[in-house]
Amino acid sequence: MKTIAIISQKGGAGKTTIALNLATAAEEAGHSAVVIDLDPQASAKGWHDHRQKESPVVISAQASRISDVLATAKQHGADVCIIDTAPHSETSALAAARAADLILIPCRPGILDLRGISSSVDLAQLAKRPALVVLNAVPPRGPLGEQAEEAIVPYNIDVAETRISQRAAFYHSLTVGQTVVEFEPDGVAAEEIRALYKLACKHAGMIASNKANKEKRTA
Ligand SMILES: Nc1ncnc2c1ncn2[C@@H]1O[C@H](COP(=O)(O)OP(=O)(O)OP(=O)(O)O)[C@@H](O)[C@H]1O
Ligand SMILES: [Mg+2]
Image (cartoon, rainbow, N blue to C red; front, side, top):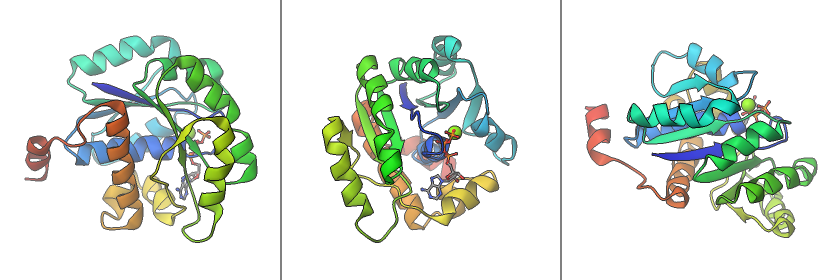
């Protein structure tokens, strides 16, 4: 089982959006996914409550219980656990980062967001785990994505080659208890999320799809 922690001390960067979208992309790829919601606001859990499907499982937990929750997920056959964290909580983000095989730091391309990533980068370095910044909500046209990538160079952290664009499908899908791979499976947003999941698998050291399981689920 591999664990991916989504951390960003900045509010609204897209942690929950990316956690839920990666979890459903994992399920689509034939992996059994669990989302661990460490945010007391429980947005991920709330999304699951409005969902027609049981998978992916979303578990609300406290940071102090993270190892037990991960051990239980592993016992139940999870292939991948995705930890969604709260903003402005270093203790919880650090616990998630330490438990992870890969840390993803979502960041919007605005200047204030870019300036705000230093504390998340520090946490990832403290945890000594592989980490990638994921540019999120990038306008599909214009130079903002490139400019953001340049602005991250001084932080000495890798930036995911897959960027996530600003698209209405991201918020419309969450409103109805889905994610983009379910809401608009042939859309650009779904393609980006699948590409990000593939990249995350590569960096976390796992094979990006389980073909036998995938066929069973779509049969
Ligand atoms: N790529 C995107 N395109 C369009 N809307 C997006 C995108 N990513 C996130 N959003 C929207 O931005 C808002 C904030 O996203 P989200 O809740 O995922 O951020 P967060 O980092 O989890 O926030 P918090 O720090 O409060 O937990 C939501 O309304 C979400 O639908
Ligand atoms: Mg959130």
